[in-house]
Length: 348
Image (cartoon, rainbow, N blue to C red; front, side):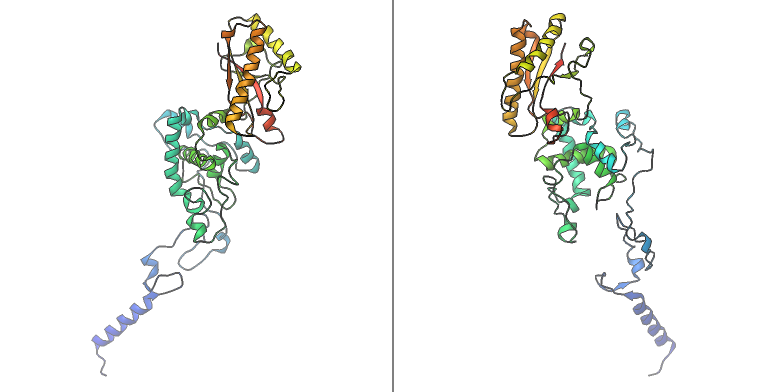
């Protein structure tokens, strides 16, 4: 075979093309100059430090999804939204996570039930983009990363994560927890609150608006009758009557309760223009419909006693809220006992 310049050129070109192609187990087939064909993949939580085929072992197991720089917020021309976007002050520590139990969602997100549901609906869309690949569409811990990637599943929202409050959900989205990395750089505070509202629907099957409103009181400083100056109580402020206790399932006043109510009666007689709502509350044990009935019966017992002592009936309103307005996280040690209470709120 006689080689000429043309044949030599063709042979050299074919050799160059073959040398430029590669194939490995992570490739769908042969690729021409793979570094040009596609860029290096960047993992969201683990930066392998890849440059061409060089791997940085020091970075291989280090989370690299970042939170926003300290003290910075996204620009927003709306003053109300800019206020919401102010830096998140709860720290990324175990203590900070526990403290976040009591962090309250801005009231504008739950001003009405319709508004709250609309925000939760927006959160559902964001959840699909940022969360469902691990947590699954229904929060059952069966996302594609788990079912196909064979990673350990996160706990389902209606199981191991059911007791997380909105504040804790927001904290976890911001900083991450366990195998989950931080999303504070991917979702702003407005978006994180919306996702938290959607997660709440996955925890309980619905938004449970009445309990959501009650949750705004968790962690507030409790005012206790006998420890506060009653004339200084403002309209809308709650005062707990801790001397009033009932036997389980009963609405009958005890002698101790009557002593406390006699003191409250003296105040009402001295200030005849004051009007009050007498509110009954329970913990979250048992069926909620039964809790609402029982709490209303207990409030009625208080009103009936005070009216019999001379208070004009129109000055008192009885209300039963069941477990919808907790002032503490329900737990067997302390929280449940705090939530079982009679309180009054000054309405005039």
